[in-house]
Length: 98
Image 1 (cartoon, rainbow, N blue to C red):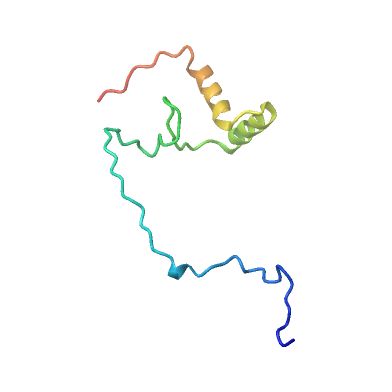
Image 2 (cartoon, rainbow, N blue to C red; image 1 turned 45 degrees about the vertical axis):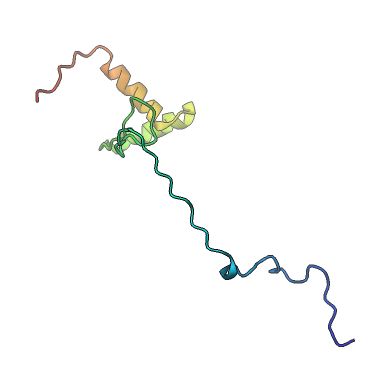
């Protein structure tokens, strides 16, 4: 008996195959013609009527907003939305002139 007898499953990398011999398949290019409007990155992935913006706030306000968000089990954006809606509730806002 010259050959060393190996146990079944003794090569942990036996599932790897040489992929260089496989036929190189290129995916078919599908042209999709749609008249979709290009979505700005500030609105990408958001619900209708929402926009992504960056603001500078006082550190103490941010800490309070984060704490409220945590204890009320809400997203920060929900807490900010509630605060802004309360602030703007009875305000008469004139549009900015062009």
